[in-house]
Figure (cartoon, rainbow over the protein chains, first blue to last red):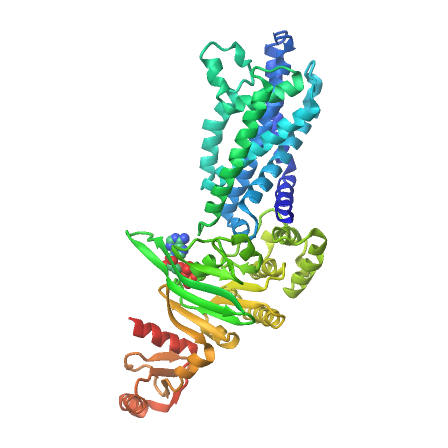
Length: 251
Length: 302
Ligand SMILES: Nc1ncnc2c1ncn2[C@@H]1O[C@H](COP(=O)(O)OP(=O)(O)O)[C@@H](O)[C@H]1O
Ligand SMILES: [Mg+2]
């Protein structure tokens, strides 16, 4: 366990050193979204929930997804370029522990960002509630680990920062936006409502919105099961990929 | 007790420009006993680092096996890695952390409990003369200091087996001496050492046993004494008044002397005397240095 927590602590320390950079960009994004939606969609609602509030919950989850995916990916690609990946190659840490250490560090960063973002913006969001704080934390933790493990997997495979930009821009962002951050999935015409439910990110946003606003497009327990299932699968994937990747020579 | 057992290791890499492969290691066997200082020697590109990487568990061989104290590096990687400390050839440093942080987290990654880390960090920094750099950012250190930091990382967890890949490449004389003093001291305290170098004099001063490799193949292996005995009286060493003359084939310049490899003592001595004649200042037969042994062996290989 020492092995994993040491690596976790190291990765947390790494983002703490860049705390302002870590926090600033997601929070600015948040403020921009809220301002735009708050002004343009004033008075509109989704089943009694003010529209801005509905979007706000989605945006918080988007922060968690983005930061838990990009934190390990960025650290690993940088490590390969600078050569410090050698530390991970040499040290006697099991691949599963490497994956979890990075994923938990990513979750910690996401959680910190969300808390700060909430503290700054929640005052402008009408009727925001947390209906089930415990389940909300579970949703955040699982999402952080899920996308953290995904980020580790990608970081182990990717060679350079271009591939990170491509995946973030052409895969992750579209999936986030189509997952129902800005609209209820149920309001989509067939077959798009069904298709959207196959977007794994829909379940993260759906569960989070349920644990805060009490609103869900899809049954929250189904979403919880999907998230947990993907996380478990990712835990096995990350072990294989990490083992293989770290035994490659990067010279 | 056998610390390291390397059995028929082979490794190929895809060749850089042309098609085909580079045979970096070919069927290498190697055993190191507890308490030895062992040298893995060979010119640049011989395949030393490739073998070190395979032993360290960071590169998979195409075939063969490696065990450290009976722990299989390939199948029981973490258990084997716990027993080793490795100083890789390339100097790399963390951009974000200071020296103390680098060591603190690295010790943890080797399973050293938090409460023990500070004592060990202090000891390693003292050993490597880095105490005053404790709070300096690792990336701001000089090249030599970075090298010492890499060594500090490798010895932190008190490994039973320490591997150093070219620890003295590009290092000034004073630091070299320091590094070798540390290696000797650790060896006296019970650490088994494996190091690589392409400076053969270093190996002559330090090692009990060596493996010479060239083009991925073992060309000589065993105790240094035995090898030197085998090659004793192996060169005609001579000095000349005028060095700028047509030389015999296979003559190597060595400081003020020249060396000519011997196959038959009387005959070769005669050959040298005949060829250089009056120009000879002195001539005698001599035990070959590791360098000459190496030159001869690689020459015969061609
Ligand atoms: N990652 C790699 N990809 C391709 N070729 C490599 C790689 N690593 C080493 N080689 C080749 O293998 C041979 C042995 O290299 P190396 O083990 O680094 O030698 P040494 O450490 O003795 O100088 C060289 O020809 C080198 O070019
Ligand atoms: Mg090398």
